[in-house]
Image (tube, one colour):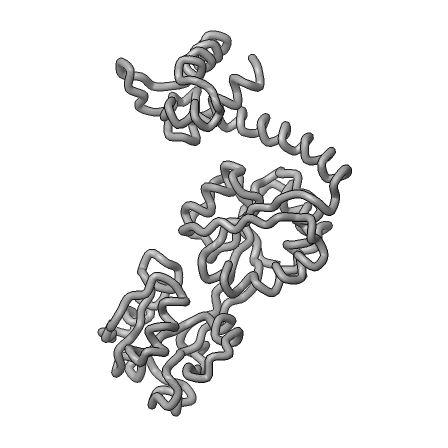
Length: 314
């Protein structure tokens, strides 16, 4: 059994048993991948894949168990490589962060600015995705960390801790009647055209539940794809919206005003997603501490290498 075989098996599982994409990712050929998988099955004395002719239907029960352990082996190989890199280039390297458009554009800007001042030799790669994608990328080791809304379901190999709290406000064009109310009700909001979010997004689902639970039918004017689009529609006078407060507080746009919505929308949290047992570069721990001072390296490492519940606040 070789590391090359295990790497091919893990990659094949992550690529949905697509031999063509696996071969491309590993810079080899489909026959070479097939030979490695067959050889691994022969060594183990069991089928790792469920086949119907040339069609791959999925992993066998033994394949599921084997790929989980193979991923742990590959993770430890990566950890060993990072130990040397961490010592030899403590202030140089790369970090890939998976997050949403909103957090990348607003929630993380201050932390990124401070981090780049401390580590000019580290290149940051920002990767935008949906919540399920972000969790999957972290799980597969495609990214170093994820920052996203509190996940409903996590892969078993992810640790999730609270990064920071998120409060919301109602935004409207300056002079709008809703701004005169200290605590607008759901019915007050529903009197006006509303700029909504895509319901696949965390905020969109949250707002939808808000109206459903109140038994109020909202007047949806436009569904925006992200916070930037939502604000543009509000500024254009098309409607009002409920927005993360941190976004509004970072605006210098005097044409948009806000009123607090904490009495309507419960405080939520952005979560930090990390792969269990992963060795992280020192500068990654430093970035995390800039985002979430409550998670210094000494505390976070205990969560990364601990067993038990994957989700925790601090």
